[in-house]
Image (cartoon, rainbow, N blue to C red):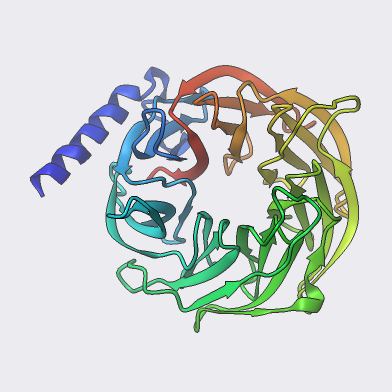
Amino acid sequence: MSMLLMMLGMLAVCLGMARFADGADGEADRWRVYLGTASQEGSKGVYLAELDLKAGRLSEPCLAVEAEGPTFQAMHPNGRWMYSVGAMSQADGGKVGVVYAFAVDRATGGLTLINHQPSGGDGPCYVTVDPAGRGVLVANYSSGSVAVLPIQADGQLGEASCVVAHTGSSANPRRQKGPHAHAIQVHPAGRFALAADLGADRLFVYRYNSEAGQLELLEEGSLTAAAGAGPRHFAFHPTLDVVYLINELDSTVLALAFDVEAGRLTQLQSETTLPSGFEGENYPSEVAVHPSGRFLYGANRGHDSLATFRIDASTGRLESAGHVSIEGTFPRHFAIDPTGRYLIAAHQKSNDLTVFELDATTGEPTFTGQRVSLGTPMSVLYQPMP
């Protein structure tokens, strides 16, 4: 216990040293930023920084908890627990996919491991918590499966209550020989879960029962993308019944109508994430809707840019608004702060994070000049200060 207290004390000191001189009265204007890593290039687990919204500045990251490969995180609605995918080393030299449960120290932001459970497959890459806070859903890339793990009263994870193995393959002989589940999210209303599968070229729709922790595939409601598209991540519009799907292998983003009564997806539009004339290799990663619902952003790896789109307020259709350099190499992930003022991008290969200010009128991202070093950053997650 003394070692734990020492680690939390070091974390508090580290963040205390990083506080900004102009922010003594600005606790309401600060957000904690949790940073998942691949535990490579010097990184050791999940890191924690602070974003000062008044100054638009990001502090130097501190280690919040040591863990193996915590690449993607999700916060429980109560703010007391956080969950992360990971890959734990085994005695035989192999690794097993797990989901970690962490307790969040609300005073310091430090994390303490509660427990972990097998993720229900190999190569877990995405995790989310359902709106009711009853279950954690995880996508396992290597095995092409999705799973539900129940959350206990103390935040612990139970064994998987449901594991679904995807099926299917597609046109890319190197990347699509079989299914590769890449993301899963529960619709805000809580009745349906969607899962993007890069290998099967599908965005699957499931009926979700949060009390039982079960998924029921709705085959007729699911969407098949163009052959070789490679669905990766997706985002729900905050007010329209529209879903935006970014495809890793053909550099497109799709606008999809979602029937929230029947659980059915219908394609409205397909747009490229790249500027005209670019011919190099490119692999889009993250996609996100601005909190205002007026803009969509997509990250390009290869072109290493942010693509910006305007969103039609009535139809949800997209209009390209240009591209800016993301100021890093191979952006694995980015996230917009909940106020919509700043965007932080995590660059897996240049081992750093960059900060952009977002224009409230045009949506245009402007690089603030801030670059923070961190080994293999893989994801960005915000939490309000207490």
